[in-house]
Length: 112
Length: 112
Length: 151
Length: 151
Ligand SMILES: Nc1ncnc2c1ncn2[C@@H]1O[C@H](COP(=O)(O)OP(=O)(O)O)[C@@H](O)[C@H]1O
Ligand SMILES: Nc1ncnc2c1ncn2[C@@H]1O[C@H](COP(=O)(O)OP(=O)(O)O)[C@@H](O)[C@H]1O
Image (cartoon, rainbow over all chains, first blue to last red; front, side, top):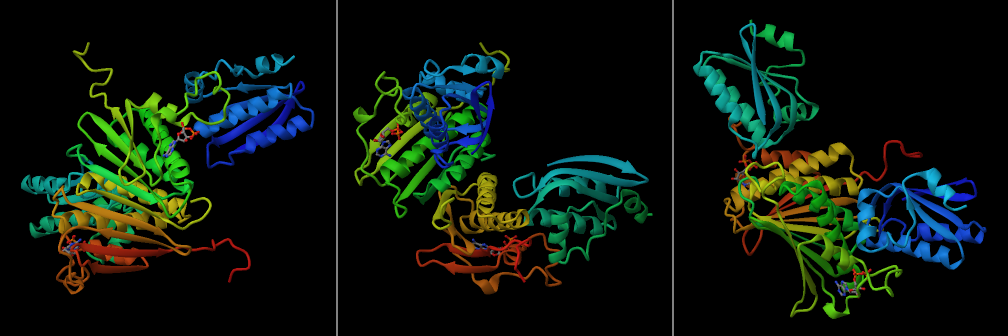
């Protein structure tokens, strides 16, 4: 997994590439998110459009990142869910927890 | 494996597609060649350019076809050997047995 | 399996997470050999992955001298997959429900839930000699959607 | 195997030629996991294929109740593959040489020759309990051609 970071209108966008699974640097997203919070960046958008695979550990990673950000008064939202990831979040009732978007502009505006 | 048959200047060209291996209709080429001989067609060119895999059974299949044709006074030659097949024929010393070509025109003319 | 879709295929490997991709691509190849559609192959692969992770982590506690065994059984109407470890097994009543409000935001506890969601049946069996055996089944759709005379 | 290229991976299956493609794609995946180049993967796969065909046909005489076992052992410097059947074994002196003029135009007799050509070592071992074990090894090139300070 690799993570690219960019900023738009005060929102930090993490473009995540590859697998979010048990083998693949499991804590990477969580660590990245923690760093951002420490730097005072509390509006975080995870772009998951280029994620090729997610297992239950990966879902756990997204949930941990979410609770970390929320506990510190920030917002973490999801962009470009693949069909398979959407299904995993739906059956685990996490679609009701996460704000998710298919349009980047709309997602960024939602933080204002 | 599938075999397409066409004729050019009295030479029957068999375009062979797919695998020449133990599972894949092992005797198909041999049977096809036998039918051609019975129909009096003794100039046969096997176009192997679209063959994806050959194992030792496949090599045996080529050898059987060759001996069948030769025993009946015909000629069986090979066209468009892949790199891997050429290596298998080289180490088994069968490159010295088979006439092989990379150019179809040249191959056809060699039967005259 | 061209001639006859019966028989079985077994694998056995050291408790190393590094084997997961190998096991999963084997599962994909078996799924495709049996004619499962791409989505079914995907969910079978995920279910197997979750079960193998559990066998390595919870069952064998990542002790690389302990082994995980996976057995694929090919039946005329379904694929049966058995995953065995050398651990202490589990009590089904101890498996937490990840949809419980208290569990919704926990980082773990969704593996078995996925297996139960995507396979047609799942059973847990603590073996007399020790170790858990997870048995999961996926039925095959013999008729494709485009079949004629099908209602 | 990301962390550590040791350990082993074993498979066992009914004597059915239909499993060949599955075994071969597993071999390709293992070869690629270990960093063998595409050509080496290909020749390892062919060698394994030939040995498994022999185990099914000559060893187990296509009796589907008999099994073939393949074991991949991952060493730091090489891949070891063992293929076992439940047949009567063979005498090495009985293996014909396909390059002999008398054999050149025979349809069979090139399988073991291919294995010997493409693997770094091959040994045949008739097991006390019966059945042949073919043990083949392929060394890994730890340094790629582009490496610096390499002469
Ligand atoms: N093979 C196993 N051996 C022993 N216990 C297991 C095994 N698989 C699962 N468990 C138990 O069941 C629980 C739920 O497993 P699972 O739903 O996969 O979630 P997670 O692995 O994230 O905890 C595990 O936390 C563990 O206590
Ligand atoms: N697993 C085996 N068990 C018993 N005999 C074997 C086995 N493998 C090979 N042989 C013997 O060795 C011979 C040569 O094998 P091989 O070189 O693969 O050629 P082929 O299989 O085409 O005959 C076989 O014909 C067979 O008699």
